[in-house]
Image 1 (cartoon, rainbow, N blue to C red):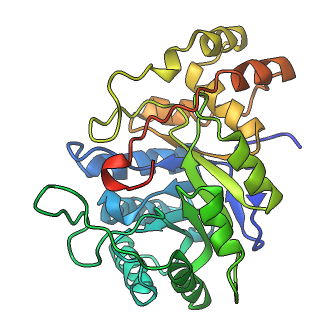
Image 2 (image 1 turned 90 degrees about the horizontal axis):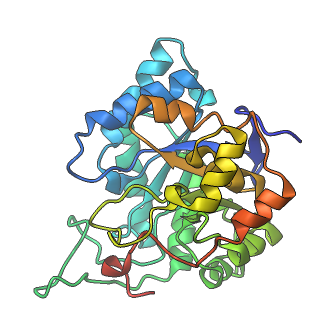
Length: 316
């Protein structure tokens, strides 16, 4: 089936997710209003999937932008697939709903389409979203992730969210949930860093075998936020193989990097605050990569992460 900007993948619970989404994370120094402007542009040019999270600190602005585009007739609420994420200080089962309710209040929406456990790592519950000890090290907590998942299932049954999934999980952490006694709903997706230099082929295969969609973030490898990224890392969009293929198709390297992920069967989250880039990133449906080009791009894998979560995590 040919991919178009209207293409959606059916999740294992029957709901449908648009194959390209706008990511709204930005480093702290960016004004929150930029997220609102980006969302408005995205909805105007045809995006129907907006990816956000409590920890991004901009759900008030993002919600306002969505509501504005609903009230001016650009979209209906049911056209917009909105994702939010459970932050790591809300993992105890009884706290999960309060985190989602905070997001809904900020957004001024009645429900979200997809709610993800943001990270398998848990921090000490409380008002401080990044609790640190006197040595500046994160204070962890150890709720069983299966109990957190029960809280996610409760939110789905309460009608606050249509679909539930996870983010940054490896296959073992996914198996814990898939094999838990009394499982009511399987995760519909796993959102992970995934790009030409980290193609996650084994995890993608695992997810596909369990009818779980892999959502790829960091596809362009280019939001070089000093808090998370290694400044000495290579710039993915300057890769010579990628650029040669882009030139051949008369496309940007970013468009080819996204198209590669789409043809592998993933959902792609692309981040940009520049209107012309937001528009360009949706123009990935008018061309197709050949088998040989896909193979060449698959061959660029280095198992290299751009997002360094080690400072907030005790896992490598």
